[in-house]
Image 1 (cartoon, helix red, strand yellow):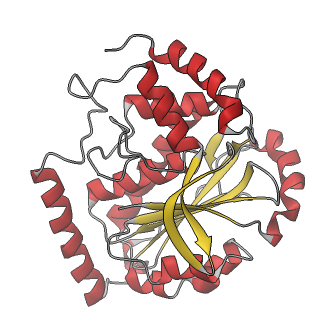
Image 2: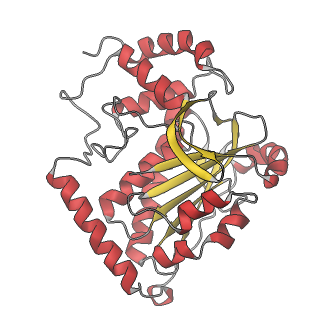
Image 3: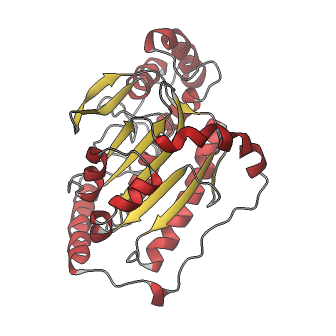
Amino acid sequence: MLSRLRLAPLAALATAAALAACDTATLTRPVALPPVPAAAAIAPPSEATRAARAYYERVEARYLEQGQMRTDGGGTDTPFDARDLARNFENIAFYEEYSETSGTYVSGPREIALHRWVAPVRMDIRFGATIPLADRESDYAEIAGFAGRLSRLTGLPIRLSDWRPNHTVLILNPEERAAAAPLLRTLAPGISEAALRSVTAMDPETYCTVFTFAADGSSTYSSALTVIRGELPFRMRQLCIHEELAQSLGLGNDDPRARPSIFNDNEEFALLTTQDELMLKMLYDPRLRPGMTLAEARPIVEVIAAELAGDRR
């Protein structure tokens, strides 16, 4: 199970406009990637981390035995047409999965306006001290490659950079998450106590989570924060990278009818599917605008879906 949350505005976002003004220049800067530490500098995992890793290896094995966590993007067994695409896009882009009520996150779809990024996304990756070197290298390569794919699909500049990042990806083992509140407050000033608890006391059935932030009254994202369990095995880490980074762009809900898709919380697919790619293209189509309501967008969504999907069945 994965979760993603749109959160209240942050005090730090007062500088968002100033940073956005610098974004054109940043596209020509060389990518500054943090060095991968030597193996000797990596602390050994705790007994709790080893136990958690063993548990999630069993979870992953069970998924795979059941034919879940597919990597084929969908096939003849998962047909969809333009009507399916339009319906799934509406349910995923115009609703949110969780909302905060009285300091607690409540599950349940709530209609919202269209949200997406306008400024380029500068993504920074930070690993907990006990994340093994092999996992760091694999995660870095996976995230870098997927960021490029998302950028090509949406037309939005998305790149890895430690220069003024506006999307931080944290990959942390259990003790590192439990102690992460000060880091989270630094990365996301004003983050709520409920959001902090969802990371520091992460539910075992939550594999990862993403928080997206927008200035007060805005439907344009200014920053994001993703947290992924460091103890997950390879395929589950891939699943988290694909779903949370894709959802951070504005596809924030899950819908059980969306198939083939990673946006349905049933783990049938581990990687972005053909339909998911089309939904990302729809989300960043210039005919749609941040702040549009579902009623305003629906006629346009139906036209774009027909253009992209046509008669696929």
